[in-house]
Length: 234
Image (cartoon, rainbow, N blue to C red; front, side):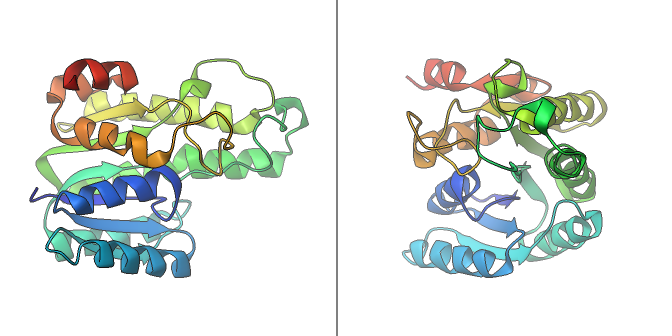
C-alpha cells in the first residue's frame, strides 16, 4: 500500500491502532501527539514493527490547538512522504472521567479547552492539511454515538464531538476531496472508559477501509460505522 497517511492523536487508543494498521499495510505513516516523548516512543515502536519490510513511521510533537504546529507538521509530512493520501483528525481530550462530568457542572475553562481541542482542532487539522493533500485524498474524523445521542455525564465532550461532525460536513460540502465521519462504536480508550468496549486494534481495519476502499461519494459528508463496514466486507 503506497500511501502517505497523517494521524493526529496517534500515540494511544484508536489513533495508535490506525497507525499500526497502516504501517502493516506498507504505508508511510506520520504520527503526532501533544507529548513529544510519547511520539518518539510511538515512532520507534512502529518502525520496529515495520522492520520486516512493511511501512515507515515518522512523527512530530503537535498540539492541535495551535494551527502553526499543524502547519509545520503537514508541510514536513509532504516533504517526507509526498502528497498526503489520508488524514485522520483523531486528537481529542476529555476533562474528567467519562460519565461523571455533567454538562451543567462543566467549568468554562474545561468547556473552552474541550471545544478548542476536539472541534476547532478538527477544523485546524483539515485546514492545514488541505494544501498538501493528494487529488483523491480522504479526510476521516473519528466520532461516536455520543455526538448525536444524549448520555449523562459526558458534558463538553459530547458537545465537541457533535461540533466536530458538523465541521467534517462543512468541509465535505466545500472541498474537492472526500471528508467523512467514522463511528467505530464504543472503543476502550482513555477518553471513553474501558468497560464493555472493543479493543482499538479490532476497529482499525474499519478506518483503513474508509480511507482506501469505500467509493469517495460514500465517504464524503457521510457517517460510516461498523454496520456499513461489515456489510461491505463480509
